Image (tube, rainbow, N blue to C red; front, side):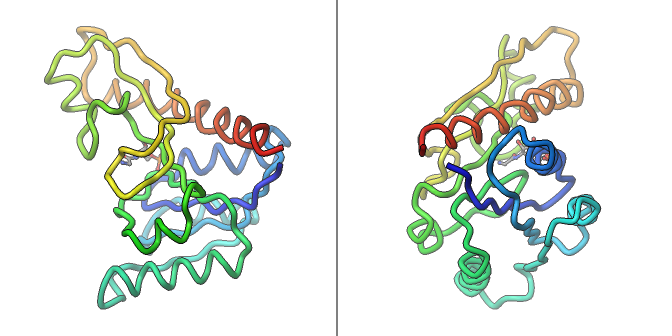
Length: 191
Ligand code: GAR
């Protein structure tokens, strides 16, 4: 099955870029229909436009509450016939209404081996706790933060010389491959 993908970002968009490139070079069958950012100043939006992808900024700060923001987001995604939402550095926690509407259609990439290090500052906490291995996880999004069913993970070894920055870089390189692998897996599973 080929999905109509929307990628949701808040920042740099390096995972987003890898998914767009995989779509453009035929590594995945699915189509990246649109990239949405909640942050009007993200560089990721410009990167997506440079690949000819339709982009949309839906700035959560312009709404009175989360429900209104998510309603607008949801309506936009329905209009675009989206059936797979890939969160790629999207730094908003999605609410119950949105998640129920898009049940098992939202996946997220997280820079740790879940269930370890949910939430923010994952690399810092991994270094502080002296773990020997860390990594990344792609999971379905449910109502509990970073707790949905795990689809796949990849591991990196944490060496004694690693800093927060070097660990982040190592994991990000794994993330870029893992996200593509997971989309390919979902395409096969839905055939
Ligand atoms: C990635 O490391 C991703 O795993 C993380 O934000 C970064 C975004 O990088 N996501 C989270 O922490 C979500 N909880 P990118 O914008 O370069 O893809």
